[in-house]
Figure 1 (cartoon, rainbow, N blue to C red):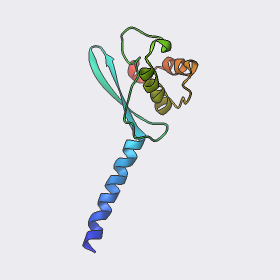
Figure 2: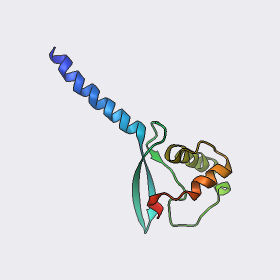
Figure 3: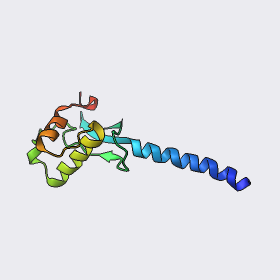
Length: 105
């Protein structure tokens, strides 16, 4: 009986942690010579927590076609989970790039 009381809170805590990991993510942006971390609620659950936006800075702006294959794939993940854009086409990623999140304004 005593063991059962100990496991129930542990199961509850693990469940809450899993839910937070599945539904919360963050992005790092580089503004005013500072690294800023912005948290957001994901559109789809995933175990990925840190996302990548190559346009989350005040530096030179590249086009989508200038991104490397890995940068493009990571940016497509960001667009899918942050904004709900599931398409990896250049047009869809340009649309995602044009949607300026609050951390860049």
